[in-house]
Image (cartoon, rainbow, N blue to C red; front, side, top):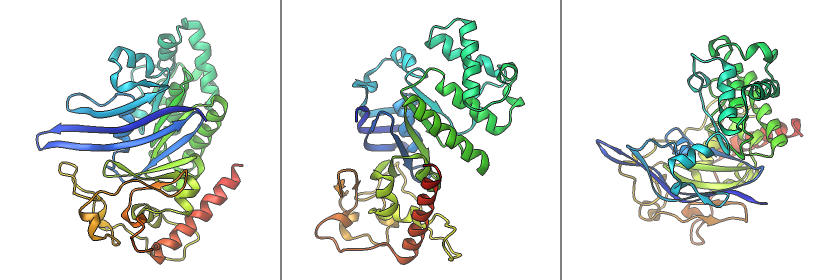
Length: 352
């Protein structure tokens, strides 16, 4: 498959009164055309900062991309000028943000907000843009689009507003769509509709998608591959089956174990002890060591490299070293993982 995006050793920092916050610390991943990569992890793990950096939306100051490369179709976006990025944003790379109400301008009619990008990037006249705007609203499932384009965001429900945001993101047929927790503010029924809509549109347009979420429950339904982030680093990456059926990093075990499952009779959910480290002063060694019940002496002294498990599966944990003890996840986590695996299988089956 053809690579659309390659991120190499990307570091992003923010200068604060307290010092330098190292929000993203050496992230590496790639993305093929038509593929969906889900980035998961706790709040503060660096998911949103990573994807905003891809679009060069990190405010400077206080933020900056310290080092690394972001190769989009071979072009290094880190070296691109702001004028060049303005031509790329919205046209080649689009982003769906978490809250549709803050993404939309409350003083502009919805139609004008969709048409704006079409007129700027596609060089359409107003008549052509209006026609395309109506087609986009039909595509995202908004009824009576001819009249709805004349309305303001407050006249739409939460789910309909998010559909409008999706329409804006798709207006110029981007090659890469970044979705930053696009369904968090929506109820479960509308969430399922938006996810199904995004999958359907991706099939039609063959765009690649980066899907940010803290909810592993939606990952099986939307992603081809999963990257698990912790303390500004990717600690495990693999296919959906790799992560759900054969996770190797203790942090991934904890995430899977803390997800509720309909198949589990246990009333108590597993909770990862402690809290993420302060990235003003990242810990020596493995950042997860202080919260890892399986941590060894080396975890507190030396940062683990990415160990190769298979051609598609990598994890950064000393437990994969040849001299490490052979450990399985705790029983409570195993049960949760089995329940999540069954749920993911049934979800996949429903959408085949």
